[in-house]
Image (tube, rainbow, N blue to C red; front, side):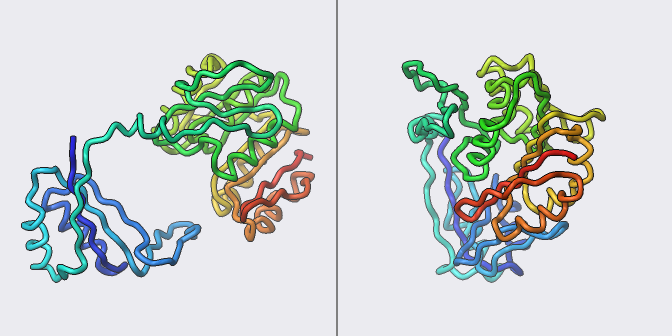
Length: 290
């Protein structure tokens, strides 16, 4: 199905009423983007910050009269030169993703591939991922740091907890590297669905279970990985500590390099921390449970 996008320049004060107006006019989706160059890297707990200069994109059916939409918005003070109409032709987004996906090596033992990519086998372990809405295909620095760490620790027979599992890439990699069983936890149902699907593709579904946070039963794990955000990791310090067995290993990422010290302080009492790994502005904090 083809669509029509209407891009509107606004600010943080005008975005909420403008969003309501577009939805009332028939928009099927709204997205917000930074209209300038003022990134919001990580909000404080409970905050939903926006940029000062915002581009709101409203998605309409292709047969909607864009000029009438613009005229209706003008009645609410939107200036014509702040509006741009753009068609969005029908595309097979799965095929688009597959075409652009490049198989890649991560660390000495793993290779990330899509299911359509037939390759001659070699000594590397293949982690198969297909497109989805959940985070984690191994391209982001934080995911790569965690995957490299998993290749450096003993995993044979281990029970693994992947907190904030996204696509399930870390739990699946741990199982393919020798872990016995893994639990994936995420607040997003889409992530749990993606993890379950990717587990089946990689033939580890019988050893990987997924849970919403409130569904996870009490218990500890030999290995805990959490690729979330620094403030969330700090808030979860007590729970993540309790989930790590004595002598168990912990890896925390999703951390901006400037926030690494705060994360270290939150876990230092319970863990013997290794030197933090820093790369491209991101950090990986790891340790062994005392």
